[in-house]
Amino acid sequence: MMKASEKLSVWVTGATSGIGLALTQILSRQGYQVFISARNEKKLKQITTDVNNTIAIPFDIMREQDISTVKQHILRYTETLHQVFVNAGSCEYLNIDTPDWSMVKRITDINLIGAVNTVAVALPFLQKQVLKNQELHNQAAVINTQPQIIGISSLATLVPFSKAQAYGASKAGLNYFLQSLRMDLRAQNISVTTVLPGFVKTPLTDKNTFAMPFIMDAQVAAQRIVEGVRSQPRVFAFPKRLVWILCLFKVFPGMWEKLMSPTLKKSIQEQE
Image (cartoon, rainbow, N blue to C red; front, side, top):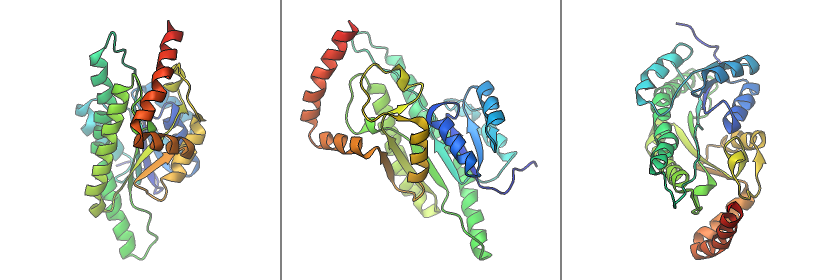
């Protein structure tokens, strides 16, 4: 059975653009063996050419029937994973005047069910990493930190945003899934961290027509994520200025609605 080197292995989904691509580049430079997944095989292959220490694992996260195949693909290279970055996601907005309700299901399937399918693939590899760490402990060797599931959610889950019913609800569901998973996996020495980034410049946010305060470059966001999850917190949210603002409005939801109503009205008028 072909194996990658003994360097630690990590897995990044949604790796062909935005935060996922930036994470791939950073983790590669740090010396990890990086497994990268997305639906676009052509882009994945190009990344493996451009970025060292990367292996393409094509995966449509919405296809539950692909879970076994993806597991076998990863097994060709390794039996363990140190980290999995559950990053693949999408965003579309609901026009309440002409609602596309099927879009809500589609976004939920990508952002929530896709995350569940990713964890279903990764968990056996993380559990094997725990066993490997225990063997190192028995041999008085160096022990790595706990294996870790890192889910990329959004600060949009703190307060409601207009037209973001599908995106916000799916990411809120992801938060609950990850935080509940953290409780159940704690006894297995597997850590789970929920990441709540603010606005990040990606192909998804490039489509937005509204103001995005404190927006940051994907490379900057990815670096902050890599550094922020190192201590394996329950939640890592950034940038702090936006976190504080949204947390304040979460405590005073009426103020948030009053603030957003004129902003929304102005946005609609500009579109007309």
